[in-house]
Amino acid sequence: MKRGNILLLIVLMLFVALPQLITVKYYLHLSILALIWVIMAQGQNLIQGYTGYVSIVQAGFMGIGAYSSALMSTNLGLPVSATIILAPLVTALFALVAGYPSLRVKGHYFAIVTLAFNMVIFIVLLNLTDLTNGEAGLSGIPKPGNGRGATIDFYDRQVYYYFVLTIAVVMTALAAVIVRSRVGQILLAIRQNEDLVASVGVAAWRYKLFAFVVSAMFAGLAGALYAHYQSFINPEIFSVAQSLDAILAVIIGGSGTLTGPVIGAFFVVFLPEYLRFADSFRLILYGLILVLATIFMPRGIVGLAHDLKTRFGSAR
Amino acid sequence: MNTDVLEVDGLCKSFGGVKALRDLSFNMRRGEVLGLIGPNGSGKSTTVNMLSGAMPASSGEIRLNGTRIETLSQWDRVGLGLTRTYQTASVFPEFTVRQHVTLGCEGRRGVGPLAQAFRLRRDPADDSRIKERVAKALELTGLVDQADHIVGTLSTAQQRFLMIATALTSDPCVILLDEPAAGMISHERETLSGMIGRIRDAGISVLVIEHHMALIMEVCDRIVVLNFGAPIAQGTPREIRENRAVIDAYLGEAA
View 1 (tube, one colour):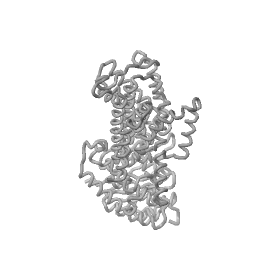
View 2 (cartoon, helix red, strand yellow):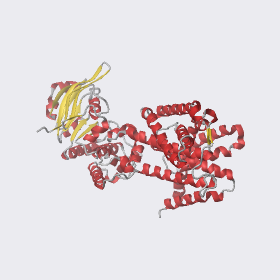
View 3 (spheres, one colour):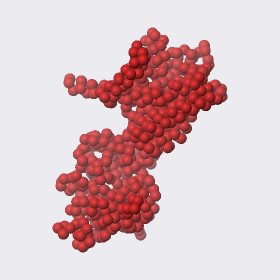
View 4 (cartoon, chains in turn brown, blue):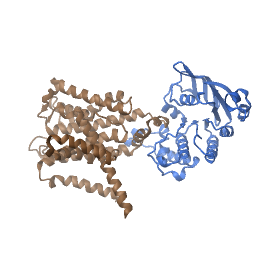
């Protein structure tokens, strides 16, 4: 067995054992949120880390996934297991429509166009009160399974943890399959030299759109899992600020790597909690940490670990 | 039988009021090396950009193996067998040489990447064909020993050879080389001229833009000369060297 695989197995076992190790219930809650963010960050990484296009609409897509899954289960009475699968598809459809014009522009312009999309989604969620109940949000969103007290009781936080863990692992594996395939090579090629991609006979826009739509599906799925976990959603959670967190998760963890988003997701969920002591200075501190992180570890925690390993390795 | 691989007929390009290229016509035969020369600003790169599809032509026809291609996208033209390199070394710096060259096959694969990514379809014959093509391109460009090097660490000349190798894996019938010798020293130019000869021997037609006259005169079967966006002469290297108009416009008396 290769060393990398052993490490992967250990990490997986750690995740499986985590609920037994955690004594404070609140940390289990945060871990669930972090796992949802792993899915979110893996999607963001596809478009940002591998394709080199910074998208600032992922939280908006998360919102579309969350609201569509919530509404389909409450208004249409569809089983939650179905809506969680349908929600990413609905999100993908939106991304397809949004992505086609957005991806005609390059670099920073793409970031700005997606930012605008997030704002539009936010405003629609806020004002389409008949459907979304506006600022007050939707509450009483059902959990998957057969309700409280069933054999597998999704109201039990541990159960929901394992549920989300499974999906996070599957989605990470899916991201791995994509980036290690020929598609991944083309995405990396787009990141390095987009103009040259056409001259090797590849229509770059198809792959950019693919990466964008897939990243949206990841976000939509994360949104659905979030909605059914919290049982309550309002537009606030899906604002631009959350999109920035997704970007940060990728940068801090390690852009263009598969482990980076996992680390980054836990980082963006747990760090603000640990900064609570600073009260209103929290955001300033948060910003400072981020500035320092991008200056001193531009390739994220994964890149830093890699550097340390090679330095340590050569010293021996 | 029509043996012309590439036919260019009345090609024009204007940028606003400026006519960058006027009424350029020429043909390329299979396995022929055609030089395109002229002073700076005479429309050489514009021509290559229009042929490759990087820039739309204002008017005129381009036929590849008899098919009109002037409205097709650049990637579709690669798929039909027309490929190019760039004036400045333009590469994917983070890939290994092998990955880079393999990417050149994308336009000519049997199975689409999306289908293959999700294991929907797989064509083993396709894979082995591609390995073979990559190996051949690496050998022809002398990059076999560098196959596992990172592209960004290569010398400029090696990056230029890499562009050629990548273009070759798309299995082209026409390859356009935009100043392939720029920044090369003499022995690298010799390697390049040998390379162009071997590409021609493989039955591929080569269009070369170059300012280095010794190289052009050595490798080309025929030469087209542009001046101020208009063709002023066409012929064998010997005819071009003795052409009065070409001497006045570009070569000068010493040449």
